[in-house]
Image (cartoon, rainbow, N blue to C red; front, side, top):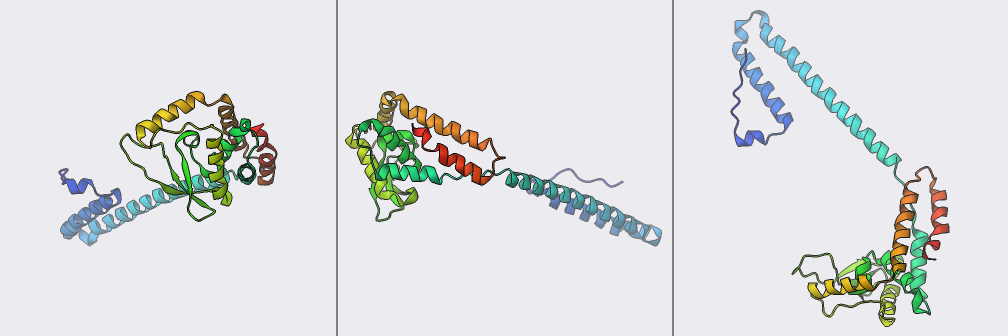
Length: 246
């Protein structure tokens, strides 16, 4: 009977399972080599070899099954991937900012367009955000990030402006400011920004919230229709993108 010492050092506990298997087999092999002469015709070593080959084959089979299962799951995820093209929505957003509304009542369209092209939050667009040019059509300098801890300082940094819309994005934010649709913080401190956001949320009309809800519901409906071929999904997006803002 072979008895192994169960006392293991802390470093032993950190070894991967494959290393443990290898070490156990090596220990058995050393014991076999030590006692092999006590058995005729190398019976002990031959028996160990059969055992060793069987163990290795079993573990190899387990690894093969795991690899097949992993590949199957990966293929399923790839086959279920949904190709949603939002180019029409981006084009609408840029067009809305290039040709800004003549009446302030359409401010919600400008706000949504800014969110689409910059990826910034509603509360930032309507309150704390500041955009500055950086000499590129594809980027603007952004300051006024709201998601941070109390006391944490987040300076200005560059963010992408989709569809080479940097100039239009800056003009759109200024349009909201000029039409008194934003609640600007008193200063750039965390407390002032949070206070302005709370005031903005209380004064923002329901129209913007309805539009955002429509966007989320529309995205969910398209995502739930994987059977649609990409051209049909693209056509659906094209026909509905502007309707969301009516």
